[in-house]
Amino acid sequence: MSIHPAARATGRLGVAGAAALTAASTLADPASAHAEVEADIPRALARNVTLTFVSEAESDSAGFQRVRVVLPDGIAPGDVTLADAPRGWKLKARSDGYTVAGPALKTGTDAEHKVRIRRLPDARQLMFKTVETYADGEMSRWIELPTGGAEPEQPAPVLEVQGATEAAATSAGPDRKKATGRSGGVSAGLVAVPLLLAAGAWWLIRRRRASSGSG
Image (cartoon, rainbow, N blue to C red; front, side, top):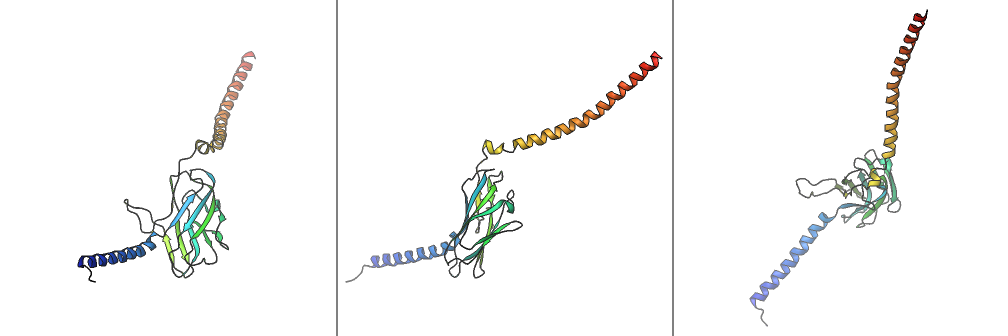
């Protein structure tokens, strides 16, 4: 049975297309691996917020052993506590953030950990530069920000934050009012003292003059 030339050509194109698609998927997989961050309360000035970080595995030979996170302005390392992590992993504060590390995970296993933040800063976007280290020493650096509208090759995890609620925005109000009241009272006292001294001196002068006139 003979095969029509057109059918043979179509078959070759189908095989070639499938091979090209497979190759494209293989090449795209490493690029799709990245680090992400989410919040249970993604709102500015929210308290006791839990952040979940997920590092997608992209190594075929080793598992994750450590994840380092650089904190954005407004969040101090002392404001961060570990809420959940792979078994045996511990949190260690650094001058610019923290690391979570422990026994190497199984190859191909994503690394997920959660931290609790005392209070989110008043910002609309929070960037958490992340560096992942595998057991074989390989590192993935997710530390770049979009520039000129172009998506970077290794984007840093970015948390989109909603505006603060009115209650949160005014929660520090009483403290500010107390501070203002204290400073206002001090200023008033500093002004009042010279006035009292001047009034006392004027009264003393008038009294002496009155005494001299009566004599």
